[in-house]
Length: 65
Image (cartoon, rainbow, N blue to C red):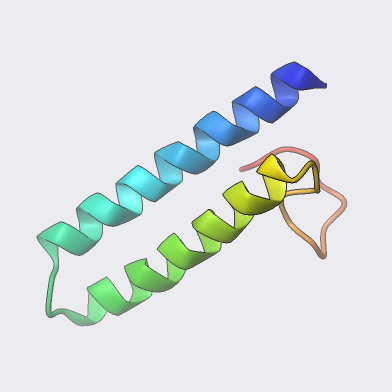
């Protein structure tokens, strides 16, 4: 179980970094608004993982995709 949590944290951080990079490169663009939404979602996923909850509240999936 610990390995799954660590793997999910790594994946969530990867998503967060990717969204931040996209926002930096597309500032003042419609794409940046979409990426900001994705960034907020990824931060919520990471928060749930750190609190020992499932990453996606409405899915049975245990692993971050």
